[in-house]
Image 1: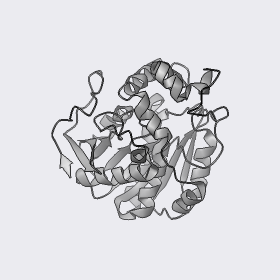
Image 2: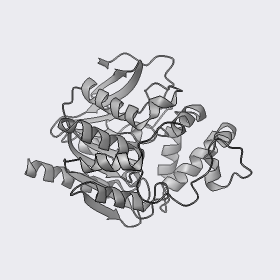
Image 3: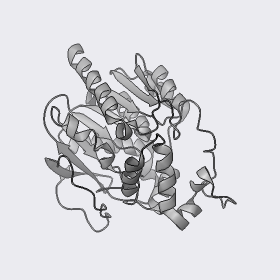
Image 4: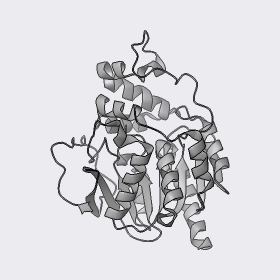
Length: 307
């Protein structure tokens, strides 16, 4: 059910941002499991495109380089995952499981009046995207994965740090720790987004993303670290059942998920197209949007020719 009333006091306000290149035509909320998920709709035209949120460390403005471009020709839906932006901020880890996010995705499709769409996702959006494509194939016209974070391939070296333990260091990935987040959450955001946008001359992308991160908080983000995730074997079975066209975009300098995860995802899904971005990090949709947008645009054109 769509709701167009303003967010309640329980929903934290989004920090002030610069003027948008394009304002939404519709703003609303999907309601699910007693909570609200904020979404926006821009433009018109087929096929509809949904930009699926990654980790709640950012909200839907992470797609600001894509929304105005694609809204010229398509109906575009963007939404804030629970925990950031205009959506509610539950503290229960179950609200952030892969299954819960997949359910929220379908709820936003329903609330926005979207029968089916091309799903474009970044990083941790990948698992819920696959789940919806496998379990609701009639709702998904195609899948685009950007720097996917999935239970395949090799984890980036140095990221296996105990989240809840008291550590003796604060160097690098030791900052991904609840005690550090409680002491200095802004420093964590600066470190994380510096790793995400590790290409030269990425100051603006880092500053923007840190701003998005300040719209959540340490305790809410910590709930996501305790959420259940799909295991590798289950995920492989889901991938094998995907039948829609698929594009995987992966940077070779991805320091968050690592390049091998995108490579292995493209091998796990039948006939997936793979594009390797030389010099690309974990956020090429923000750092190199022209190149990413052209790849998405051509993928959608091929969908139209094959329908």
